[in-house]
Length: 217
Image (cartoon, rainbow, N blue to C red):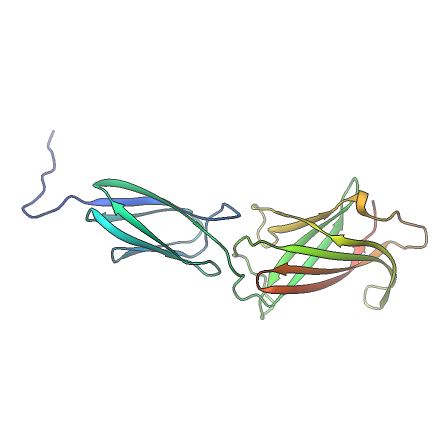
């Protein structure tokens, strides 16, 4: 079996392999650009990366992506394979103009919310980091129609329990208001409610109102 032989003055090469993931969500970081030793790669929906043909020695590996805090890590590349895993912290949702919140009654009780982020063109933002956030909500019985209404009796006021749905496309951020926290409905409340929400993220506070919440629990 033939063995590879290094040429005169040729140094053995190494490579860096690893992952780039969202620090809170755990998924891939969209448009993560990894740079080291004058070589780079850009990842889209794959958290795994590799950069080859690096001369062994010390390097600064830099990673950047829209909406994330940039990372710089000192790495010593060995002959063969050196592993480096990077976790990136989200700081903003790039291009965010406003939010849309959809709400549906849950079979068995309570209300589920889905939060969507929208840019100035009115297009839903698909790729964004998982951010620390909180939401406050007020739910009223609706008087009138969806387009012409007033707020009636207050049914709920307080926080929404938020969670992350990694499998969703636009609405990865979801929330629950459990049945136990909702005021018992009366015959005069009608079938629909008005939901006012305030979402707080590092970029600020964002509001939305839904006047088509079905009151069935």
